[in-house]
Structure formats: structure tokens, C-alpha cells
Amino acid sequence: MSFMGAVGVVAQQGNQVSGGIGPSNVSVATSSTGNYDNAALVFSSEDDGLGNDWIDEDGSNFSSHEVDITVIRGVYQAVLANTGGEVRMMFGTYLRATGATSYSTGLHSLEINIAGGNYGNIAINSGTADTSQDNISGMDQRIDLAHGSGGRGYVMPDGDENLNVSITGTATDGNGVSTAGTPLLITVTWD
Image (cartoon, rainbow, N blue to C red; front, side, top):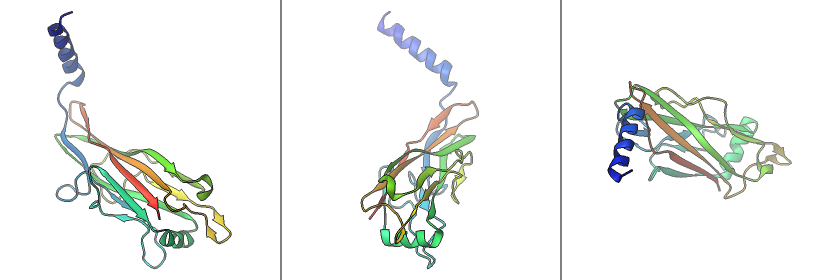
């Protein structure tokens, strides 16, 4: 088969499979317009009982689709004492897309780089990917962190231990053609 023939076959198959070009300008953001595109909110409803949050990212620290969040161990220990050793890491997103009729935003690829004895359980909860465009107040999926108690409080991550998770967003048009935005990578490190 000649090169021209191969190009014609590939182009024809591509048109048959896609049915169109799909939504454009797909990205996960912190609001419908303005700040911050290619970013997410990362927060928790639990605090240390005095109003100090252990995690609170407004999206402004994302760069090239990534953010590194530092958790201060002293504040985290106080939050664990206030909550009975269990906390939730939540994510707020808005899926921007032009020409979309349906949406899906979800957590993926949870990687735990924490010694096994330093936590009881860390997992993406059983929620499913969100199908709403606006999840600013919090996605259905979250990360639940449970810590066992030790001799002097709750066992928690050592300094420089971390976890990573990705947020992906996909928009679909009326013809069923989907376009995925670039995933966001979130790294949380205890210090």
C-alpha cells in the first residue's frame, strides 16, 4: 500500500470513529471564569478546634497543572486529636469546556508514599466521578485519611512523607465525542 493510501485509510477511519471534533478548551478550574484555570481547590472541613485548617489550597499555587502542598505536622496532629484520628481531603472543581453537554471529573492514581505504620487507612472514598460541571463546593470523591492511636496521640506521617493524586476532567458533546483536559497532579507532603 502506498503512503497516500495509508493516509486516506487512517483519515477515513478517524472520521468514522470520532463523529466530530468534540468539545474544546477543556480544563479543570476553580471557577467558571477568571482565576484559576488548570487548578483545583483542596480543603478539609476538619480543623484543630481553634479554626486552624490543616489543608487549604485556593488554586493560586498551581503551576503547569501541578501543586505541592505542605501540611504542617503540628497542626495536623491537633486536627487528628480534634477529630478522633480521621480527616477528609476534599476537592473543588469547575470543568470548563466549550461545546459540551455532559461532564465527568474524578480522582485517579492515588499514590501513597507513607510508611504503613504511620496511618490506618488512606483511600479515595467510594464516590464516583462527578457528572456536574460545577463541583466548587466539593466533588463527590474525596480522600479519607484514618490514623491509629499511638502512645501519645495519633500515629501520623513522618516529615517528607507524601501522597499524590490526579484530577481528570472530560467533556462530551451532543454527538458523544469526548475531550479530556490535561490532568492535575496534587502532591501533599507532611513537614
